[in-house]
Image (cartoon, rainbow, N blue to C red; front, side, top):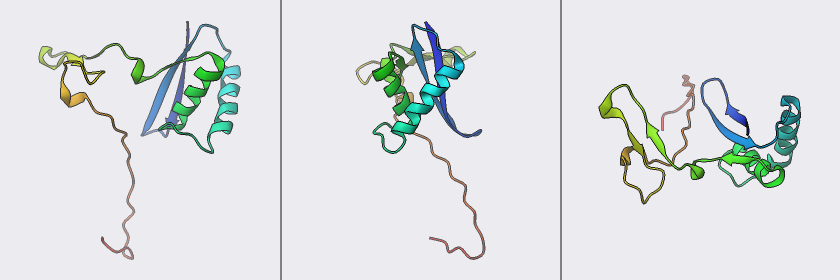
Length: 120
């Protein structure tokens, strides 16, 4: 099994997805495949992010496995402190810590305040 990763974002805020494939792609070949799919899907996609749209197309059209959150069997929060280790809920029907059962996307924005802007 060979693993591949897609990143989206800048140096401070980014997300990534993992993909797996039974065959090994040369890095340049994988890059060209991703670029061709990116050009095709970037105009309009239904996924939350561009990399998820590309990963879905790689899975659908090229036999990759998109390792998405929906495929997780288990997730564990690990810490040096015993009290901070626990099973993270991966399905609404499972018992685990509700504090980490969130479905959200983080967005940051820089605000450039100047003398000509008006407060809302």
